[in-house]
Image (tube, rainbow, N blue to C red; front, side, top):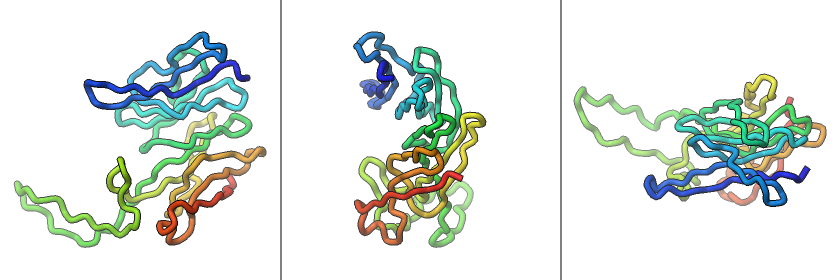
Length: 209
């Protein structure tokens, strides 16, 4: 209803040389400025439910990747889903009953060669890294891991994520629901040799069922 704003606030620690993010809320008239997340961890992507009654948040606490939900006041957020990897592009369905997101799904790659095991007590160098990708490294992220970002959806009633895509392409970018709640719209490059035109993305429609 436009009465309350939530935002992500980033802080830096001089002791650990690390950034941390938290979620804060404030009334649109500038009053009632308060922290919504108070526990240690990194929080991002606050998303209002369509009716404004709930707030979904992505969190990382230690090694745990979570999706939290709560009311937009000072009460503690409730953990809904625990993931192996972080969630992004969080999006509510129009009826407020489901949440869609993307997350990285690793893939085991067949080794180029099979090396013998090191003798007991031996200290060998790391094996050679075999690179067969055009885009194999990213600034600030290091070597690209084997796998892709896939789309997921879950209902608030059971909080059981269901993987919607599994092709060997990244399904990323902001996710939007169609008004009838039957399909997702997202950007991606779901075609061979996409690495040769990394900025040439398309818009795709995927039926949730």
